[in-house]
Amino acid sequence: MPPPPPPPQLPTPPAAEAGWQVVGDKKKGKKAAKKAKEQERQHQFRARKIAARLRAPKTAAVVITLQPDAEKKGVTYRDLLAKAKEAVDLGELGITGGLRLKVTQTGARMLEIPGESSGATADALAAKLRASLNADEARVSRPVRCADLRIMGLDDSVSEEELVAAVARSGGCTTDQIRSGAIRPDQRGMHAATVCCPVTAAKTIVEGRRLLVGWVSAQVKLLEPRPLRCYRCLVGHHVSVKCASEVDRSGLCFRCCQPGHISATCCATPHCDACAATGKPADHWAGSRACVSPAKAKAAGRGRPSSAATASMATAASATAAAAAVTVAAAAAATPTPAEGRPVEEAEMECL
Ligand SMILES: [Zn+2]
Ligand SMILES: [Zn+2]
Ligand SMILES: [Zn+2]
Image (tube, rainbow, N blue to C red):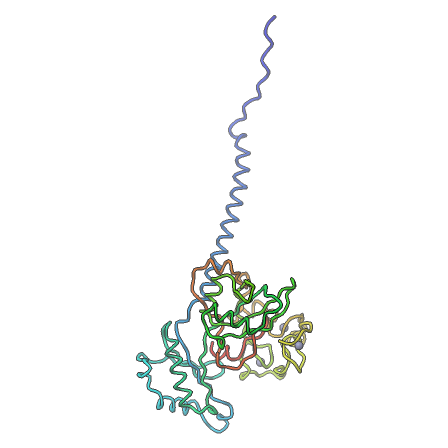
């Protein structure tokens, strides 16, 4: 008997055919690589943006504000500055290169001392000016650049004082340089608050990723700068002294736009009177980012729409960059506490 014929061999696939599967894998691989590259690019973009915001200020400033009552009596900035020049010797303070003068949006005079380490000199200059100028005629403030941090995951017992003390301790600043918004429960039942502090402190805290408050190691998130808003009309990108609106909303709660209370104690549904008046959706805080159309925000050079609206701590921590100033707040100025969606404060605006 002849041996049985060998089983038929499957033909070897030609190289082109065999390659199809590989091409499919390659496509998948390319797609994944492209996605990873895009994610990395976005990550780097956010890191750079945070780094820019947390960069240490290159100048220190002192602001002289003429008081309205004195202005009515005929006192001018010329009088104030002449008196200041007579009373204060810059050489004694170690200021040899002169000051830079700016006029703020509210008309106040800002004296800037160059140098990242000029803070102490500016403190000394502010003290001399306060001693030499009449407090009824001029307010001397020492604004520092500030950033807003959202502190999340706090326990029920934490007070604002405790939170401020924790920020001061971790950030290496004084408690009077920090303002805390109301501590409120979040959707998960834990508590959170927005804190405004000097950028140098914000940088330290953000890079540390967590903030120890009482027993809790709380989450930290760097917030976007708040858009410039007028305190009087809650609409325009201007300060209240330049407000020409016929509507005065300065006495209203920022959360619900009703008179008689402030937003820190308000639990009502958010309602923006300014947007309601123009027929826009109004279920947000007055003067919040929801009021700002992207085009207007871009035109105003602030509050860009938010791919990097909030910088997560993870991103921030990976950014090796330095601390940043988002808003400028006059530490000495009596301003309301910050909270999410609040209009930027007059003291902050005057220093920008
Ligand atoms: Zn206005
Ligand atoms: Zn209210
Ligand atoms: Zn609105």
